[in-house]
Image (tube, rainbow, N blue to C red; front, top):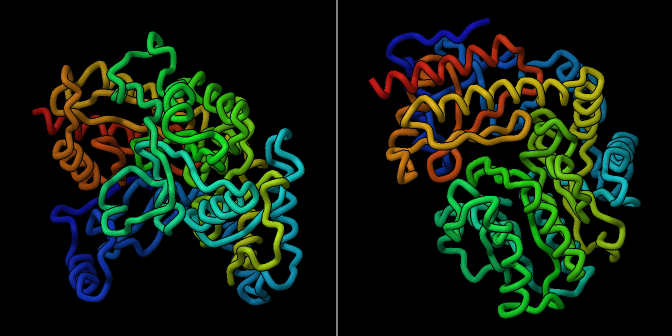
Amino acid sequence: MKPSVSPGFPGPKAREIVERSEKVLAKSTRLYPLVGVGGEGCYIKDIDGNTFLDFSSAIAVMNLGYAHPEIAETIREYSSSLVHFAGQDYYNPEQLQLAEKLAELSPAGMKPVKVFLSNSGTESVEAAYKAVVRSTGKPVAISFIGAFHGRTLGSLSLTCSKIVHRKGYHPLRPVIHTPYAYCYRCRFKLTYPDCDIWCAKYIEEVLLSTVVSPDDVAFMALEPVQGEGGYVVGPPEFYQEIKKICDRNKIALIDDEVQAGMFRTGEFLGIMNFNITPDVYTLAKALASGIPMGATVLREEYSFKDEGAHSNTFGGNILACAVALKTIEVILRDKLHDNARRIGEYILKRAREWVEQYPLIGDARGLGLMIGVEVVSDKARKTPGVEERKKLLWECLKRGLILLPCGLSSFRIAPPLNITEEEAEAGCNIIEESIKQLLS
């Protein structure tokens, strides 16, 4: 299969769907007039018969690609049996097996753990927030500028990537935001490694000594790779220092793996790339291959102690748990985490060549198949190329490649973990052709 898009995209059927949708669907974040009706592997078919190579995995969800035969068979099997039986009120084997598997995959230093199952990323973060605040009795949290943890009230309080997410919802929960290790655009105007990781040390030397007492801080929330913030990866020392600060000040570390988890970076959890053991981590997106599912995994001491302190209707859904188990089984059996590392290295190498060759590309960074590429309008000044990025992604889409934006002016490369070398090369070639087109 190859990308193939007819001239005049979007086609007439897609335009009709978009027009009708605008009349009845609430405002969201839809970027393109792309109407998907089928998929196979790393490819999406739209309603007019166009074929696209997907470098977004439907926002890092489809780690096994589309229509994976074993996932499809699992869905068929459970859809004709028992799909749902209130996992928060009763018991089922699949929920137990998934909890045991997540406990098994968790860093050794976290164990024993408790697992709370939900339906989405924001729910998994919300559960983590509530559990740690309730168990510690501390009211304040620390999060990072550029962070995205969701849009429900607790997780939204942690989110700090776009004004539009928070506008009109104040007052929010008590959260102090601090700069992330975004070395390309350092908030302190310093340069790594001469900065001595000031963005991390600032938390203890300034915030915890002048703004808030550590005795009032329940947790620090951290994405190992900032997702919506621009697919930003900090230096290893940044994560090490954050962990030391948390330990010294008896502050729990909540690791948000909603986008980086499930082997996307080559490790089960993105934070494992830095040999860090969190106190809590959250999963969603790719956990159940497109079936809505979230999970909060907590060191036992932070788990809910009181019956009814937190619950939901669909958490522990039998179908979702079965698909999650099959997803983990296939990734480990087929060593797709190794493929993520290998193909990710190839794509990142290509992206860094674009930085050297083209004035439009300012930076490239990533872990495994979670790669961010920064578009600039002035390379010397690092001016965010917001309009240039928009044009570039549209140019790629017309050539049959799906990409999604993130951060000020970056785009993310996050294809399915079972992508082949040939598919990775084809996608990178489309990006490079599109860059050249914009510069011509």
